[in-house]
Length: 325
Ligand SMILES: NC(=O)c1ccc[n+]([C@@H]2O[C@H](COP(=O)([O-])OP(=O)(O)OC[C@H]3O[C@@H](n4cnc5c(N)ncnc54)[C@H](OP(=O)(O)O)[C@@H]3O)[C@@H](O)[C@H]2O)c1
Image (tube, rainbow, N blue to C red):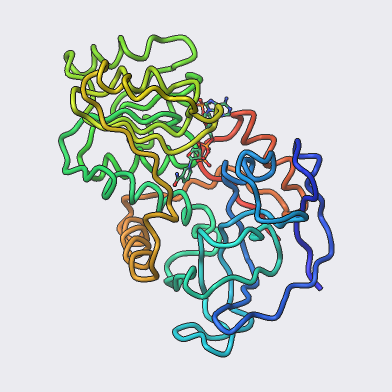
């Protein structure tokens, strides 16, 4: 018997229950992981509210964690009982003491990376890897716009951009978050609660705008983001923190400068064990080299997941939040 967070209906964080749970025996290609630390992500709130439908209710929650392999299925190769592992995608249910998932979703965790560090960066750091290194392959020297720059994904993006020699303009909602983003490596910040983002981007780029804009905020920033993309540049719309972008008239891309838009997901980039491992190797290398400091700003006991989600949704957090089973 183990404890986990479960929900049986969609709604506010009040639907999250901390319950006894009997994890299944792993299937032939699965492993059971005893979680030591669990990552909290905005996507978890989308499943809770129903913006992203879970496969069934009642449902577990969460897709990111790190721990020790406790049992392996008969056909699993490459992982054994006792291995230190981490994961960022896969079936819902990471908010749990024990999680059963396909072995192909796991990576081996180097001894240099703690369970807490891994739970704080697997999903967010792999996301930054593909955003900055694959969706738009930054070479260094570019000026890019990145929304919510002091958040979980944003804190990693600021540091990774600095390491690449990229000038990251980060938007944030407060002066305190602006200071944090600059500390982490943002080249400039815009407090979008009271500054005009387009005007500031024009000033900061001498009118050139940005070859790529990264937007995880969604509905409230969509139009401004398009305005900040240079002609024939790319808008990467990768999240819905303020609500989903819907009902887009494609003609807007023509009007605003023959723009490109993509709506990527981590699962779409880390879609084979080989690609997942290569992305994780690069992420762990960034940590081992000291270029990326893991910023765990908030720790909650697993049973207080609802309070952790409320803080994230209310924009009270910076960096990563982890849950401890
Ligand atoms: N597609 C993918 O592969 C992928 C992977 C990981 C994450 N994501 C997305 O990336 C975004 C960031 O995720 P995260 O887990 O690191 O969260 P986070 O950035 O730590 O938190 C979200 C931030 O968004 C900003 N925000 C703007 N409007 C908001 C609103 N109405 N309500 C709440 N927050 C608002 C807030 O920063 P300010 O106060 O500074 O505005 C807030 O701190 C999310 O949209 C998430 O879904 C996508």
